[in-house]
Image 1 (cartoon, rainbow, N blue to C red):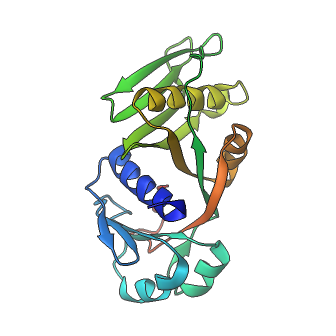
Image 2: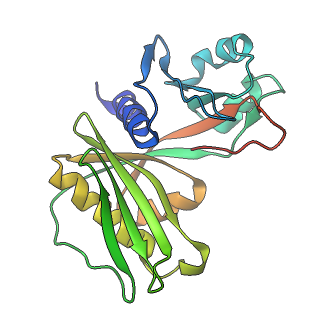
Length: 217
């Protein structure tokens, strides 16, 4: 499987590993993930907008999510008004290659935590607190990058770039030659600067379970 469909398959399986949920179940129009968490009970990842209307009519349980490969405008026009539609996100990918190991910017230090399938890069400030983190899961030979975060007080110090570089190194060491992720609008700028490309727009929509439930990318 190649192209966007192949990237989505890799991302879905890597996301499931990263988040510790069950193996994705193949559906005619994509995949189902039984997440089983408050506000996020089940997720359907759809390959395009063609089945969004049918899915949205049939799915009525609060805590149900759709993650659709398609423009936000189309999804928002298709789902009923009781669905909450998120901001645009982006399916992105890059090729990987072996490069020299990069040291953490001073005065930070970095550590790796993981089992070779899912690995976290944790950057710590001098006081031991977490300054930045990122995770990579290896699914079918593809590296799936997830949960890249730089704490507000440590932003604009090169930590995001460093975390991504370390995740690349982990992925290459595990035998991956390609990486994929789903980025927010804010994250897209960093990934573009690092040589990633946008392959598709992704839109999330969900049925709220509580009045103020928490979004999970």
